[in-house]
Image: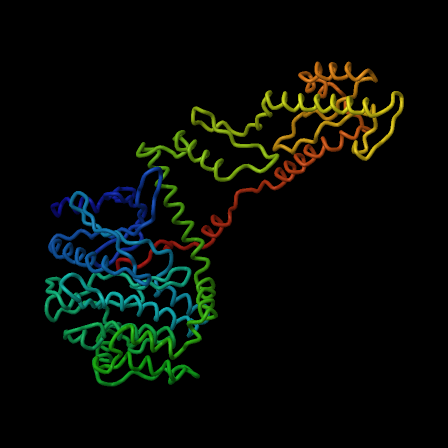
Length: 542
């Protein structure tokens, strides 16, 4: 792609444009060589996943070099599979535009977190130690990288608060391997003696243009821990030249105990070793420094220490978490609305097949409770709303009626045989029933929706046993109609059992009406009250 074409692409907004499988939602950061977007991976059936997409800024003179740097960043970063390193997913190209896809981190840059901590009374020492320990763990994973040809000797060379993201749960992640160097492999991205990085976080050998290894990153991590635990930069000066002089001279840094009372001696020892001007005297690896930190402040790595970290994050940026997530949600809704208007995709509700299958899955895995209306999906696949449950089948009712009639006949027949004519009495064998009194049908198990089942069938008048049997046989098919036509009286024992399911149904439905809630507006209120215009600006590209 020509330079003029690249400039024309930069002139028009890339918002809502699609690069490969990724849709760009909103620009979130801009750095020296690239711009970062909040994007989403578009999948089948409405699936999407938030990602960060880094694109190169237009450049006429050094485009090939920038593309080579981005490709090298992707190669190195994609090899690191660690919880404390921002995961790199893909390097893609769309119509000549190269882009790098990374995980979207739901959090804030460490630099912003530091400023918030300063406004709220400073960062607890245990929190600072935990965060730097996580950074060291991620750096060690990068330093130990190897491929088929052997160890790569990766050095990040730009470890700074702007290149560390901290999630709202308190997980620190190293990012931006844009100027990382694989010291064991030839690379044309960095010329001999060329200096890259931020001077205020560089090791002396890096500023002087000498050979660098993992100990340069250890030095930078030491600067960050010094700054977090004391509130002051160890080489802070009014201009860049003074900073460079302070780092490259042999004069050691001021011990933290001279700035902060009751600074732990063991922690100070770890810090001074990390900030030694001679690489030979520093911690040999990031992992060695991490272990030393854990030994110096073991209380920071207990459950109580982890709870302190989460509590600090909530106190420092809890309001940002709510507002930022709301900003992300609105960015997605805006993209959805635009997609539907332009016909890029249909609304989810307009896909009857998908809606029906989803509802069927719900009805299978989550049966509706008793006495609650059921969601019914028509055979056409369209959602038909709330419909009452079907009544029991006619065949089932006929069986129940026949059973009641036969029981009636047998009961009357046995009573007539065993009881002298004209006498009545109550026996234990008859279950407390009197001869000639109404015989109750067997109580059926309660069904999800109560239906009119035969509650009581009056016994026929006294007659010979043979006549009673014939009469019961003739009445059996019509037992259901007889039961429905027989009015229930308050004195009838059958009234109470039949009324219980109905009462339960009423009590189940009535609270449902009173529990209807209005849509929550907490997020909108928080987002509106925050007034932050930089909610979506993590320093991915700085």
